Length: 236
Length: 227
Image (cartoon, rainbow over all chains, first blue to last red; front, side, top):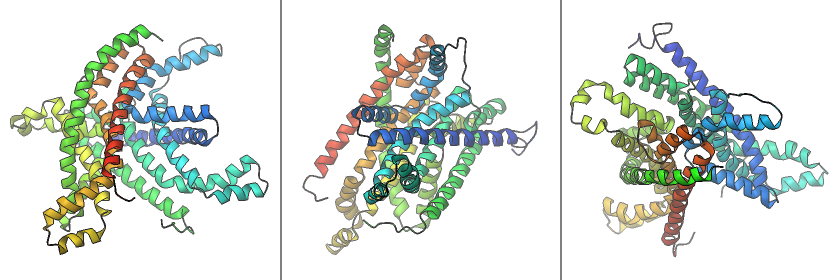
């Protein structure tokens, strides 16, 4: 069994470690992409415009109500087509192919973005009203208020929720293996197929995922303690 | 938009609905019984039981569902003693493996929901029950579970929706449910957007009905109770 997991040409150890790095990379970039989308759509949801509200509501309802795999298939089969369509408008002809990494990041990012939207919306609503009023009283412009007063507080309030979104996003990246991106899931499948030892490799994959989830759980716990220093949790 | 294609594929995709619903129904029922057991183990004072439940929940919640499915479907099949035992009759069937995986998964997630609900039962209620001379089982049945169900229902509704979405994974082990059929049509026609709209709407409709049903159950159960 040790030979199978050895490093170098004979074993799968280095390949599996690399695939773990890939899983972490694609998860972090999806989470980051999702947070950007989430911030935008959360501000849509809280805006006064009926159209923007409807768009954001439609997005979160559809993405949260449709299987992740279906969203990944949509972007896997339709992603390149959509990019080429847009490129055509700007006068670029020819074939554009998106890498599995890009497709995976966009697909999982779009899924995690729907969950982030709700988390960020909740965090913005949790900022006390007085903070907004105080910033306005000081004569701050809307952007100064958002970046200097509201955003730092939203980041702190949203942290526990983002920790949950991270765990979901990390597990969703396993689905990108269907597009051919070599992350933990794909790599263990390849290894299991070529050695006929599926039990060992899927067990290793389970351990690798548990390792990432445990480490990130610790990380988010520490971050939460760090950023909530000096704040008393309100007892309801 | 190719509306004719959407119309045709709609009738193909709806043939996958019975399989999706069957898997959701069976794994939810089995998973719920298992979840109550796991939750009771988790809150029990017996260290072995509560540790076992803790690590079960930890492993299931920390790994992707697809990996769990592959582990059960391909991983366990590696051993000849399993292939020769009576278990093989079940484990060689992708449908059985899919239902088993989803049952274990929903059991772990629901166990946490049920545990949260159980811990919200005020100790005074349980004390009142024991001072009336109720046995442990009777207290569980008449006091703890009814309050737990009411508390846990909204979160359990979310879990049900996650279950409906999770059934799409069994298409990867060759089962032709909604997503499986949709994928086949997409790879034949290269019309991902149209098929996504059709298949996605079916899922949204199923989930909408479940949400309504849970809302109704919540309304009925909270009838007359003060929030």
